[in-house]
Image (cartoon, rainbow, N blue to C red; front, side, top):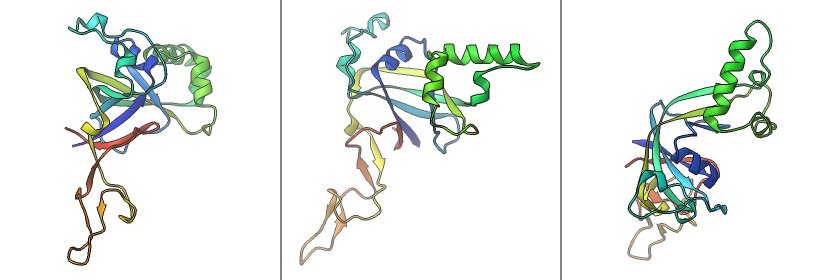
Length: 195
């Protein structure tokens, strides 16, 4: 089953784990039908806040302990589109649009200024996407990137570390048959094969 690996900064991971952040905002979306699984990769930016206390885990960790690792997963069961014009509700639907804006900001744990700054380089007609977080599962023991495999997207095997050039008696071949482990996290998100 095709899934997605999402890179998320520790401060946002903390809010997701606490249940406060129920929408992850992105500029792009995968070409997958909802519902799909998302693995949460906690990036390695410095942050030192304990997020696992409330879960009552045997060994309390901090986000820092899970940084650079996959700390959990969720199901994206819905994706909302949020356009620039929705940031300034006006007209006869102003009250309803303001309620939608307030709900979006609360669920994404973003301020109006942060949303404006994030979408500042998007054309007016392009939306931000709100990936809804459901069925959140935080791992007792974070996983490493190598624990998840992805389909090979290399267009040419030459130069790929998994390609065996062979020798006089053995023809060249790919040692991973179209699937290879992830060696570095995506800047935003990437497709992976679900487990």
